[in-house]
Image (tube, rainbow, N blue to C red; front, side, top):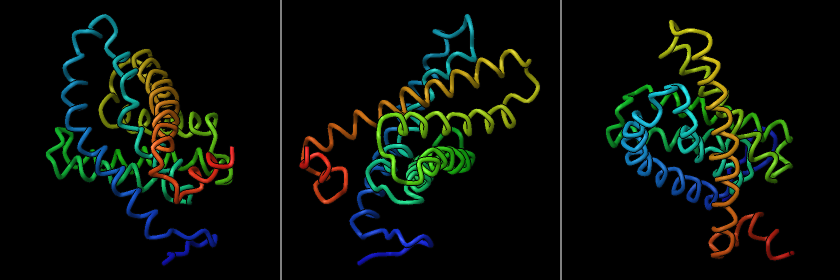
Length: 197
């Protein structure tokens, strides 16, 4: 069974199931990450906005689902569903986590769209992660830090984008390689690519 998108690229049932499983798993991971992120406050007392260097974990599911499914909307789906699970499990950010997930997934989606949904390599994973970071930083600065100085906002934005490129982009790429190695992605293009090498 295939669900066709407007550009003709269909989502198979296995795409939806695997995308949902990955996103749900990250929604659960977010519970621990929310607590860990808050616990690092003292480590960044010298420069509080630099704590956003750890932001990338929240951006990871959008990039990873995009890399696995390779369909328009996959990165957005990964960001939104992982955030929805986080909200259902009691995210300290409340309903805004859902909005954030949609915005972050949309940023990652833009990275893959720039590659015309044909470039599934490390540079585009990093671009997707960085753009998810841009989207996250804009959301957070507007909502949580509108009255702080431009210096704080600049450091926060740069740290979020860097974290997106490294933790979400490179991190998703490494997780993808590990998953391919297990054989669980053999029904996906990324699994077939590996077998052809």
